[in-house]
Image 1 (cartoon, rainbow, N blue to C red):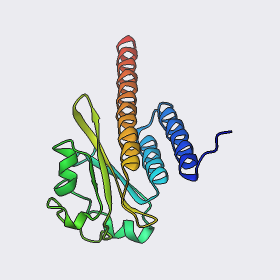
Image 2: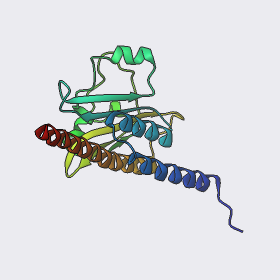
Image 3: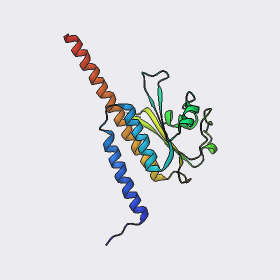
Length: 190
């Protein structure tokens, strides 16, 4: 009889959770709840303390929206109005389309510090949300709860969720375009 080691058992559970997460993303039609769920899932599946999703919304001033996960009310209050600008490490994801996984982000040559009021963090894992070679957003995690660095398995999870997120964004935008077109056609008939 085959017996799983504890690590193998955890990997099987994690893979099942990831599969369920990806499948559930196709069910939504509103962007912000879908992206919030991706952030929660990425945080849960990698054991990260914090997650952030930044995405492009042409209807918002400045074009970028942020969904922080895992921060307390005081941390969010201090951060409000001082969101990351997409430079430094985030620029590698936004501009260079790179996945970034590092043990101590303060030692990376592209690290540009933290916005005013931002909690200082060390371990970092982030991936661009790419659809047809266009960056629609980024998802990044910091500080594993156990103090360890993010692993290659964590990176695979975040890459998978970023890909699923890109499809979910495209799906939601397509639905909204169809709804707008239907309203136009109905207005023309009236």
